Structures are given as structure tokens and as C-alpha cells.
Image (cartoon, rainbow, N blue to C red):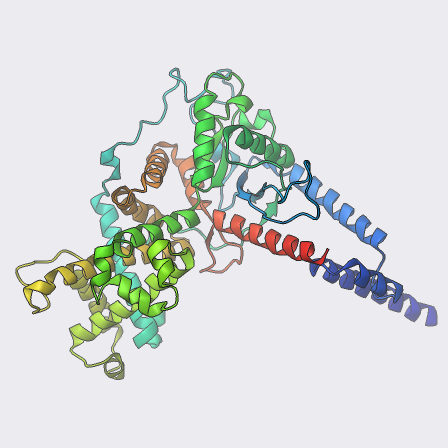
Length: 506
């Protein structure tokens, strides 16, 4: 009996020691603290820690090696800049640490099978190793300016999404009891709610800012995941990334047309733009249109002055280059205030509190959403303006209505991404392409337009597989969908925080 109790206590002690040691490892405790705790019996020795870490590393290597065999693996990677000062500067040891490349592997979900990822134009028994980018193949027709014009059906679905967003703002502020009546955001394709499992790749000492380094990164990540040339001969590989990654990969595909083998030509790569950086580009387009122009700063009811009221100590950033978080939150706050003010004007109430006391029904909320969308966003009859304002204020009303429209388009894209409404995301991007053109963001317009055009010309099963795995859901919640490049940036943030704290300790 006593031996059993002693054995159980010993096991509990070892378990607590392991937990304590991993806690100190996560918090980057100094070596002196670890030695003291090891002598006190509170944690295990450094040799045992090194053995545990090596065991975890080997297990992770074995797991990564089995990913590619299923042919249902996608990858994402990005550059990680770490400006860490070194201890001693020499000819070999420079002043700062050079950048690395980090990546993630994802398992394709939502009913996708290997047959869905077959390369277009390549049959399993085909011996043709000619690149799809060469004249001997039939490539996707290039996108034209006519492809940038949204269809009538897409505009109709976008309008339904805008009405839904207006209704959600009114419900959350005025009538929270009708939240169950909102339903899901309207979309013709919804990603099922399922928790996404991903595995981090080992960091690579390559800076993915050139063609050669991107080739090296792709080769290393394929080697880590166990993707062989037999697999890429018949199946595509989805690669997610920001605009810089897409440009480099497209340049690699164009420069390796003459290569005869599938692995060297990289013709199996299907690039997918990261929606987090696309959303940042949308926020920057709004900044270039409504905040950057100096002439708009004089308008007291303009967007620039409203941003200054929100961020009185950050006006210099608004003029030079506003950060994304400031723009994202500012657009949300200003749009919410304007939608509520529009509802107050339509109902003829002196304040929002007075309108809230009337306890509006769901039918009234829906009517208000439709009316706000018609009168304060769309181009209605100018001969009968809704405001009986003097003529010199007509331009102010028009500018405000244009901002309401663009801000609501931004909000629709952000919420559609959050709720996994990938069909609405695709519809909204067709409207943002002309906006990118008008705000001199030509690279984003070109890459998004080419991707949407190729998505329509791919085989239906492959196109559906790309759409359903365009986003990830790390939390498994109905509102937990996130862009894959956002998850890569979050992983880089954790690496920076961990490594910088360790550098400060050491």
C-alpha cells in the first residue's frame, strides 16, 4: 500500500516537474532560474529538456512527412523580418539578424477528395510533360476590362448583403431582441463550420522576395510535407500568400516554361490570394479616396474630420499613412454612427434613444434597412433630394453617400470573411476590382481579376475545392473564419514575441 502511494506521488511529482519546465520554457526563463529550480526539485535538468524537445521535433517531422501522401495538402508561407541586435558586430556577424521564411500546412476539408484536385488538362495516363503555360496547351483566357464589370446577379447579391449588414447594425443597437431574426449573411456558397487543423513548417533561411528564393522555399516545404513528383504530376498544390508571394510565384511560373519535368516547371501550383491583405488593400483604397486628398480636409462633416474626432492624437498618421487597425476600427465606428443617424432622420426622432423607446418590430427594422440602402447609398432621383438642403451642400451629401456605399462594401467583405460566406466574398471582390483601379492599386486589381477569372474557368470540382478552402477556422466557431494569410501573420507574431523576449533575457 505504501509503495503504491509512493509510486503515485512520484508520478505526480514528475508530471508537475514536466509542466513546470515547459512553463518556464514558454516564458523564456533565464538559465540561472532554471538551474535553481532544478536543484530544488521543482523541474527537471536541462539535458532532459533538450531530449524532450528533440523528441517533439522528431515526432513533428514524422507527422509532416505524411501530409503530402494524402494529396490533400495546401500550404502558405510569408517572410518574417526580425530586427534583433546581435551581441558583437564583426565581418560575419552583422548588426541585425537576417529575415527568415515561415509557413503553415493545411489539410483540405469539407468533402474534398483527391479526384477534385486533378490538374486540368492532364489525365492520369498522360505522358505529356509540356507546361500548361506553353503554346502547346490551352491556357486560361487572359482577363480583360470586361471581366472587371460585376454582373447584375452579383450586384443583387451584394445589395442583399448590404441590407443585412445595415439590419445587423440596427438590431445590435436598437433592438437586440430581434437578433435571432437576422439569420445568416446571404451568400450563394457557405463554408461549413468545422475547426481547421494546421501544422507549422520548419523555418527556412530564405527571404521570399525573389524568384530563386521562392523556388527554394517551395522545394523545402514540399520536402518537409513529403510531396513527391509522382503526386504533383497529376494533382495541383494550393499555395496561399500575400501579393508579394503571388507576384514571385507567377514570375517563377512564367520563367520556367521550358522545363520538361513537372516539379521543375512548377505548373502544378495554384496560387490563392490571401484575403487579409486584400482587406488591408480595401482599407487603403478608402484612405486614398476620402482621407488623403487635402481638399477634403476642409469639410467639417467629411470623413477626415470624423477620423480626427475619433483619433485626436493621431492626426499626423491620418495625413501620412494610417495603420490598418486605425482604418478598420474607424470605418466601422463612422459607418455605424451614420447608419444610426440615417434611421433617426427617416423616423423623424430627435435622438436614437427616443427611437429605441418605440421598441421597433422586426418588420420595421427590415423596412428601415431597405430605405437606408435606397436613399443614403444608391443613386436615387437627384431631382428630388431626400434632404431639403441648400445647393451648396449637395456635394457634401453626395460625398457622404459615396463613403457610406464604399464603407458598407468594406464591411460586407469583412463580415463575409468572418462568417465564411465565400460566395459573397467573391461577389464583393468583383466590385472592389474597379475601386482598386481608380485608387492606383493596379497590382491588386490585376491579381484579383486574374484569380477570379481563372476560378470561373477551372474544372467545377477543383474550383469548388479552392472556394471551400479559401478560408480557415482555427476556433471552430460560426463566426471564427479567418483568412489563411492572417493565420500566418499571427504565427509570425508569436515567433517574434517569443524570440524577442528570449533575446532580451539572454
